[in-house]
Amino acid sequence: MEDSVRWSVKVSRETDLALRNYLGARGMRKGDLSKFIVQAVEDHLFHRTVADIKSRNASTNQVQLQSEIDQAVREVRREARMESARHSKRRFVK
Image 1: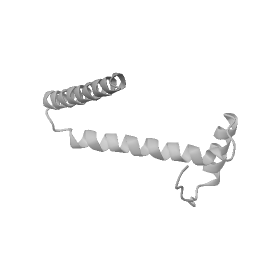
Image 2: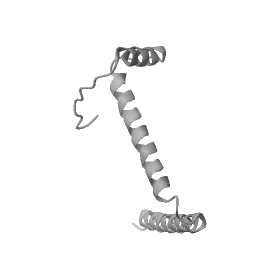
Image 3: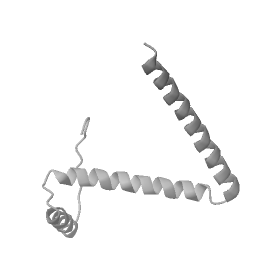
Image 4: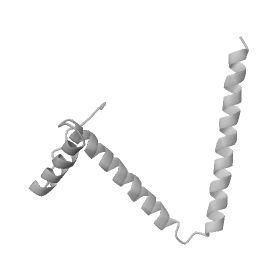
């Protein structure tokens, strides 16, 4: 982990034992605790962000929203194809 910071976290003994048993049963070592926590935090933040966006868009017309998403995806794909084509041309023009 680059630029990592140290956290001091307090959990119940039951939580500590349950997590250590879980990690140990999967062959993970003491150092893997940090990796587990990072993954858990990232997963939780992702799911909370998705829930917030769904909540914010709950009153949005779903057909209109899907149309806007489809349009954005088409634009990104078009730009990616154009960028890829530019790189391909550069490879052959030397």
